[in-house]
Length: 258
Image (cartoon, rainbow, N blue to C red; front, side, top):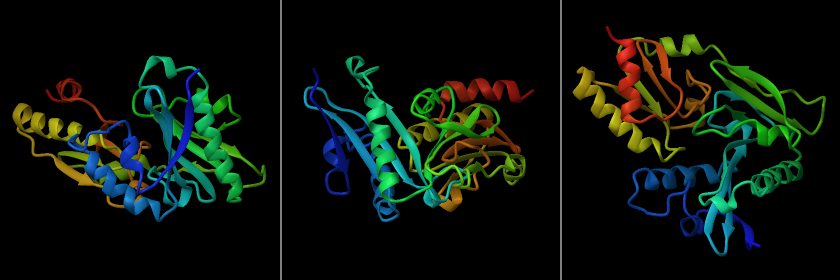
């Protein structure tokens, strides 16, 4: 039986447990995420780490009051989950640890007398699927193309429901000329992805991409993608909703260009 504990991390101890799976300060994105977190703690952000005494850090949940969330949703009054994942090692998967982390957030939201808890989900990488939330009592509050869903647990059935902000095409149209890569330090993995995509755009297609660094939750809530903290827009059309590799970017552009 693994010895597990949930560690409530903060600015003083987060380095001891890693940041989004990164424990090496030399990893691209580590220091950027660290600086991002310092500002978020004052807004009520929590990162709780699943720590295994035999295996080290094996998961985490990152959440913040909905008014300050970095997704394009209206979720004021809710606790909003940015990320939840478990199991860098196989033996820690499918053991119910994700539910334990989720219940930590739910308990915190109840103690703060909030409307409930919300999260954006989708199939695929970089975002949790809906199954974890549904089996713990969440329901679909809203959806957005191509395959995003906003899940919510309401403590009071009369409370307003969270919803996506919408107007995706209008937001994307503001990036109608050329290639734009929209990103935020909320996800440390994007630093490496963006560098590779910028290089490929220049070398393969002679494009000079515009890199847009989102500096606040207000910026993220105006994103042209429901993902919020990353997307790629080409001539006003979102062509990627989450961080992608150089190879994937090249394959997408091959289909876009004559």
